[in-house]
Image (cartoon, rainbow, N blue to C red; front, side, top):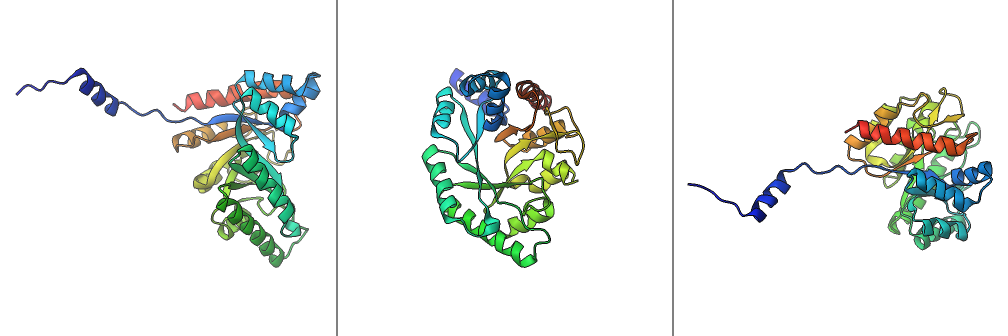
Length: 277
């Protein structure tokens, strides 16, 4: 018996059978880099932001203590809200005033992801001190999560940080199950860890990424992304193939030619994403 399909039914069948498009990560940059471009190129911050937008950057990573007029300017140009950053010194204990200011910023400005820099432990900190800091962070994470804010910590390139490497991060995440991760490629290199192994270990917690490249493991100098020892292609393909559709934030503090670095970086990241298909 012959079966006939209407054009509408045939279109529906083809649509169901067609492979679904995989969401791609988006690329952002630190506002600090925009300010540095303005200084180096002797132009206004707005002009620097426009140049960054023209390069193809869609989002900006900002700090919660930025002037309102700068945030308004970024919004007016059409930048998306990638991530906000707050320095909250939990090493000194609970910080209710700073915490409230950070959370109010998130609500007022409409940011959803908050990277917290928790300060540095004293030399040879006792286990008791470390536990107190972890508990302070966990308490803050619960409060922020209850208010709909996704709190993140990064692997920070200082051995005194409570989130320096996988060992300290594992301890912190165990104390705070709602806490998530900004995966910083260059800082894992600085800690002497395998970047891909760390990425696979934390993949479910990775809600934001800092792409940072280095000349050598213990060298603080940053390079244009994809020109140093960081395995850019492997990192990007691991993220893309696992379904990551969040932000890849380009980072190269201290760049002598920040605009050139920004142009090289986004070109290399885009190529890495394209080569994963």
